Amino acid sequence: MSERCDHLIDYINGQLTDTERKEFEAHLETCSTCQEELNEIKELTDDLGFDVDPVEPPSAMKDRVLAAAFAEKAPVDSPSTDEQDKTVVTIKEKQELPKRKKNRNWLIPTMAAALFLSLIGNIYTVNQLSGPGDTVVEPGISVDSLVQRLSLQPAAETIPFEATASFVNKDQYQQLIVEADQLSQTEDTQVYQVWLLKDGDPYRAGTFTPAEDGSGMSTFDIDPSMGFDTIAITIEPDETSETPEGEIVLLEEL
Image (tube, rainbow, N blue to C red):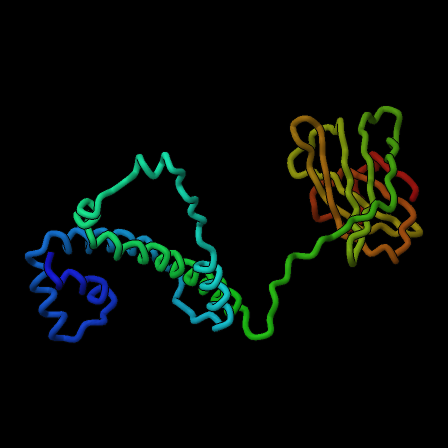
């Protein structure tokens, strides 16, 4: 093994002078040992890609990460006497072990530390994209509150329709949810129209058509300060009716 083999790590890290680099590259063309180790190191470093442009983390963050990476070392248990007898290696055998393997021992933890810094840098980059002083805000949680739930009554004994109306308080408004069942199918452009009435004046509050099984549903945001006194459902010729034109099929006082 040539003394130039010791320059492999400096060559990878770009620490050689131009002259030394050219001499080592000439040596590399004929040294299978250096070629093999260079290929192994490239395979290790090829996996350390970055998804974002590198950003230099704060120095204090670097110190904490590197300290954590190198501070703890795995304890080495002392072998028993029997184990020592079984693992005796002569000085000659030790000298015959490849010396270049020692150079790799420090490379693995160094790459691990580099990967740690890469991850920290990525996290730091994401935080910086929010702008100085910004904090990550989690989506707020809305707590709905049921105010009233009632059953609408058929307007005639021959009407088999069933429906319930629920008034739910949201954060800044109220929502009317109408759920119906056993509805007859509408014809052509017909629709079911929900109305809220105040002193006999109707207000549109949702339009829907039934599913094949006769179920239907409508949701509508309303202003609770209006003080509605009645809810009704009619069958309208189309969805453009501004006042009830069809027959009332379900209704209930609020």
